[in-house]
Image (cartoon, rainbow, N blue to C red; front, side, top):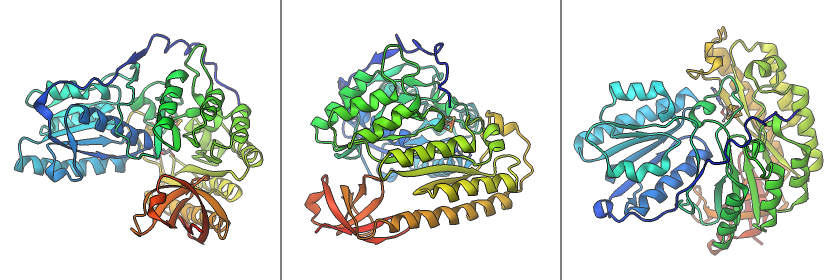
Length: 467
Ligand code: 5AD
Ligand code: SF4
């Protein structure tokens, strides 16, 4: 697998970093007002919502758990598949109803859907009760937008070429123990089915010194784990001049001494031996890798623009397994890409049989307007796609369960992060390999990494005790 020639992209970010620190705006207009955020989609959106919450609290807003009692309702949207769209428009129907009862409520739509022209057009023609639409490139402007809202629909969507904004510790983080840290924004891969390069723009890496400063600061505050975030983290630094590549960044983060480091998402094409060696070398880089496969058929991989073959993927997989002790690997798979034959699908199943993943997110292909794949003819009926998904899920679950069984009666280091949803008397946390564990233990242990004996292994979680 060759690294891309990114010379032309280098220096793109040279003069494009802007620092925006949180000076609370003196304005009593929002003191005590209530906000509610509903977040759809990936970790990037979850982290953007942490920024939105931070910005709002900076100007006096307080969070509430229900949209019914909010003064402003924010929908941070996802565009990756059609069902994400449908969920957003479903919730907007509810918001419209609330606004009829309480006309002063402000309804705000942001996130990936806001970057889609067709969605903005639809909002302008059919959803005029919405007060503000803003995009993924200008989140930091939200306080200004709120202060300057005019009656009616305000649209504030910027192009995809935006700067890298450094906003300091402006986040209201969901956890006191585990934190997301953006290392790059956007994606240059343009897989033919994917809308992300259009909604999130070009790859823009943050400077390593800013990332390291953030990690140091989190460590000082007592955070135990950071997850480095990007659509394609292995391409980190390709657009920067005189800065670190991803392997060197990982090493620098490991040297801060923070207890746990994770990263998502990796693209197989950009995964170098140097990265694997660094992951294997440092105990605080967790042995867990999310490595999207998408398809096991070379024909479909080519149509998807994934830049690797089945054999190249498998060889990378084997290298990861052999070099990184006890590594757990999960994946993403799409079934029903246009004209995927039974033979193509069987190639995907054969990779799953070979890799025996710890887990997989599986999807039926969803055409996204504006992407090359959306223009491809497709002769595969939906019921065939559904059958394939079901068959795939059965195999994925079998291996997920099988991998979990290996943990039975072993001792695992678990970072306890909160109260278990299933049983309020228990805490939950994650093993180094990212297995969810519900733990019977003293609740005061929350926030600690403890030795847990695994007493039961299920398909999607483990149970354990602290002895
Ligand atoms: N249809 C179905 N799944 C998709 N994904 C991305 N775009 C689409 C699409 N158009 C899946 C990929 C990706 C994950 C985040 O979502 O598997 O890795
Ligand atoms: Fe989408 Fe491909 Fe970029 Fe992942 S690598 S965000 S699938 S375009």
